[in-house]
Amino acid sequence: MASIRDLKKDIDLLMSLVLSDCFYVMEYNSKVNNEEIMKIAGEVIQNHRELRLRVNHPDGKDNSKLVKKYYNSLVADMLSAADSSLEKLSAEVKKVI
Image (cartoon, rainbow, N blue to C red; front, side, top):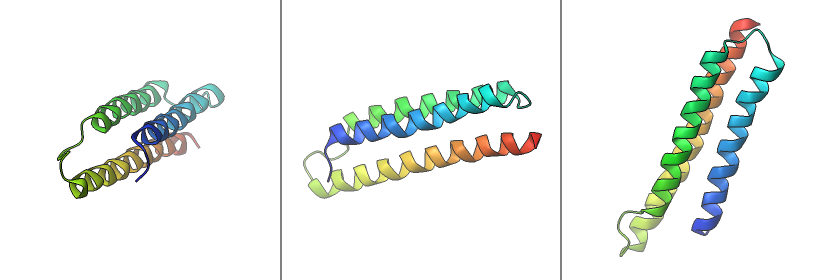
């Protein structure tokens, strides 16, 4: 398993990339609904906070198998949250095309 420090960096990187995509769309596409894009950005920030809190408080600290399973589910949740946000962003961009 990678270190918790690397996992935190991965969460920061992935969520910041999604957030920058939101701002990029708002900046360079004047036809999109900015309120909807800001809602997506807010969800990204909320997901980032929740994931960072979950990294610091794993379940079953005594059992290494439970900890590994916990962190694997956390990584899966991180990827699904980023994918979901990007899907919503893509849908908003497709509305104006």
